[in-house]
Amino acid sequence: MGIAVLALVPLALFGGYLFFRQDALVFRPSVVTRRTPADLGVSFEDVWLLGTDGSKLHAWWIKGALTDHAVLFFHGSEGSLGYELPTLRFLLSLGVSVLMLDYPGYGTSEGRPSERGCYAAAEAAWTFVRDSKGYNDQAIIVYGQSLGAGVAMYLAASRRCGGLVFQSGMTSVPDLAARAYPFLPVKPFCRTRLDSLARIGRCQCPVLVIHSEDDEHIPVRHAERLFARATAPKRLVRLRGAHDDSSWRHSSEVRAAWRQLLDGRAADWAD
Image (cartoon, rainbow, N blue to C red; front, top):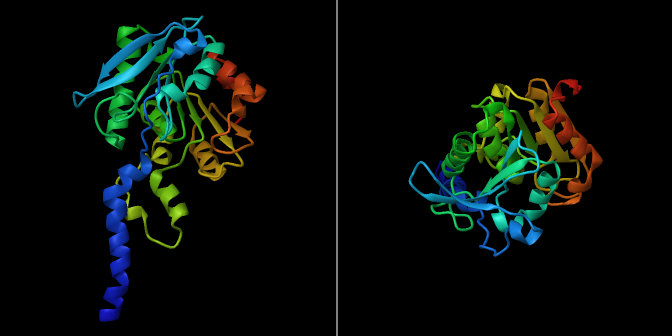
């Protein structure tokens, strides 16, 4: 019996480490950069949103050539606004207006990174675009990459938005942790969940899932499971390349799927 108890000590220590340190493992804020949309020759509005905890969150609002759709963009775990200019360029090429923001603790946003903080930031972004900029729910597309896909899912599951674009995202943090530590019972120790698989069935909007079959961080199986559980209209676009590969921005299939979503032709998607 004593030997069995001793054998559990390393597991308990690891579990405690994972439980208390997981925010630092999941959220990796990037340093502030001086790059802004002005580097693309684009006019923008520096915006400070107020989180539910009173923290100030930094965002950019960029008015597109068309005014009928706005995209809320949520970046990944290592991103910050200054690193997202290529994605902004892609979105502006579609003619949409864009709000992109930094989560608490990222860039110049106040607070500390957390799952709850990301959701609060998403709520603030939604309120700004709808109430301050006057976009109705159906004109707002929520778009997230990697960790940000889970943040976008949070909104899409509780709002009647115009669409969800879920790119390179995971089913949940516990699922990803179980893959990283296949021989350890890590799921019970995961406080941070970002459980998109549990939420996607509640999405009442077109769902566009984009994922690379070569993704080394989040296997394409995550996208396949999410797509299977989503209700129509839905579309899965398969890419090639690494998790952080940028070639998707030049993919004719990705652009066509976005165009169909924005033009109200998602009903044509085969599921």
